[in-house]
Image 1 (cartoon, each protein chain N blue to C red):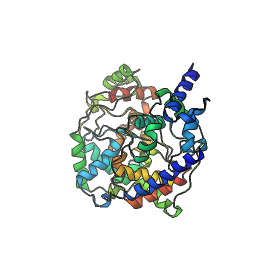
Image 2 (tube, chains in turn blue, cyan; image 1 turned 60 degrees about the vertical axis):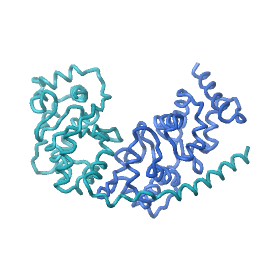
Image 3 (cartoon, rainbow over the protein chains, first blue to last red; image 1 turned 90 degrees about the horizontal axis):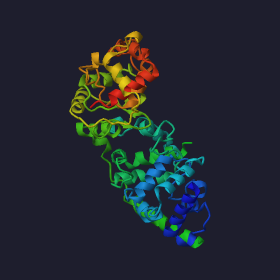
Length: 200
Length: 212
């Protein structure tokens, strides 16, 4: 029963978002994601890694994208359409699927900035009212519940997300990130994104 | 198919270049030494109304907390009598007058409790809170924290406190509080925390988490 439901949901996504890709196999929904997010969901170019991400976070973001709460330019251009017909059950199945894949670190930041980035991650900069990332994202940037894993995401993705919050874009309702990021300058953002890209 | 994908990637690459230029707008960081900026900093983790927040660690509710307690704890972090790697860094840059001003601010906030605690043993929690467990040498919590759990002076408010936070504190009392050789008031709670079983402290933590 569940399988049929999933298949229907997947077909619905495929049919509405990208009709020409509709292959009709059970993995069509997953393939629609990996098309941009890379084989095994390890991320590709601007599309973030989904492998090993917290399932509750993926699910929440899919909801935010569907409700147009997550509103940065790439989300608007690609993801709003991609999730338009994605029902809650299909979203949960996809989230659980990607969460179980072992994540690989992007390792693409500036290694000279990693030490500085680690200090900011662990301690924040209290004098400048920059909070510690560790308090919410955990000692190994592994995330918890709907708080995302950051360790090993691509430098570019981390950097643009941190910039975008400071520019007034949103991710989900009630996220403290806009407030957090508004205190970060370009140097801190580069250091954090570099450090995190190397975290296993 | 392949060309579509390539075009998509090219498009994204171009967009990327355009949008990263727009970045770097915010450089307020270093300049902000004032009370408002510091309050915003506290509330990033402790909730916009000071109601608490569940990060990787539970961030306790500060709203309605006794100012004497907040000040005492911030000093304990600074002097490392209370072990907490995050709060040491947070607290050691605060001036004594900032410390007082922050504590006074949180006293005035009154959001609804954070909620979410299991409801299975609320009545057991209420009994422990109001009557204690005489046979286990656990005094009534209300004797010091007040019948409504509002606390007084250096005795903290428990009403509306996050369940996970209270459980964590009671479980780890002797490892976190009263460290070093200086005597502080945290010693008062040590035997009580020790005498509560896991299920008893969970019951009482759940009960106080729903007090308004």
